[in-house]
Amino acid sequence: MRDRVVAALACLQPGIDPVFLVLLSGNPAIPLSSHGLIVSASQLGMMLGAVFYWRLPGRIGRGRAALVAAAALATSLMTAFADTVAVLVALRALYGLGTGILYTRAASAAAARNAPQAFGTIFLMQLLLSSLVAAVLPWLAGQAGPAIGLAALAIGPATILILLALSRGPEAQARPRFAATTRATDKAGSIAAAAALFLFICATMMIWSHVGAAAMEAGLDDGEIGWGVAIGSLSGAVPAIASSYLRSRLPLLIGAGASALAMISPLLFGGVMDVVTFTILMVLFNVGSTYVIIRCSALAVELNPTGFMRRAASAMHPAGMIAGPMIGFIAMRFNGPVGLIDMAVVAVSAAMVALTMARSNAARWRLLKA
Image 1 (cartoon, rainbow, N blue to C red):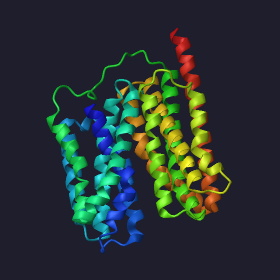
Image 2: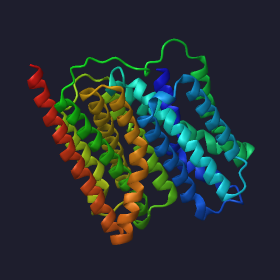
Image 3: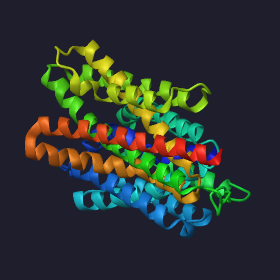
């Protein structure tokens, strides 16, 4: 549970970026035009941190992880008092680097036992924490000022530091021992599941960047969009709990196919959009995205439960979160919103192909074992 809490806290920032930017706008030295650059710096840093830990896990034991958490705490506190864009970009990149390392380390350790429950619980806690922060932080900033509100976000890395400092006993992620009977087909299926995971996350980020603009074009105001996004985000708790604790789950390809259709429903909708329709689409999108990401994460680990693959599956989360918007931006530059929609559909379709390959390899592996 400690690892799950650390992972949820380490990936909290992407879920609260809109609120973070609202508080940041209270700093007159930081122009609104730089907000995209600042968020991109933290996301890129998180991706680099995740890939770093994936490839070099032996260098980050508990003691060094505590140092990384302390550095993240320091950069989080300094964010509140940064007075230039260059300094803020550097701080957010360093913060993202630290949280990427901490997230991948904790999530891969948590997935060592019962991967579906581990990933589902992490996503559920992150969702609930994001909702809590989004509700409390604006009130705190209104009472004490934006700088204090930004400084309060340091509670996240501070909690991680405390959990790491107080932990006792052997580390779950340190040289886990697995039976040496994993077949080549099992490894191939695991890689295919990880590829599907990456593509689904990319598609999620591309669709997410589209729905807000589509709602504004339909005439919805900020309050209506905010309510739709909030309700849709909270609906992600349903698939998180279902994929974590319910034993009778949908067959893989049926559940993934239904989730893929739910994900792209905002792209396929062609009618008049009002606040009710927008909210329904947000619920479908979040339920489908959360369910399929948890299933693919767990499948990649279950098919090849080595430390390397657990780290790889965990690293796909921040990697897809930065790659998706970049791919979407390129698609938009070439063909506008149509290009973005086409690319998102291609990503979802390719993810289903990869997942079918993973399922096929898994079936062959079971026959070989039998």
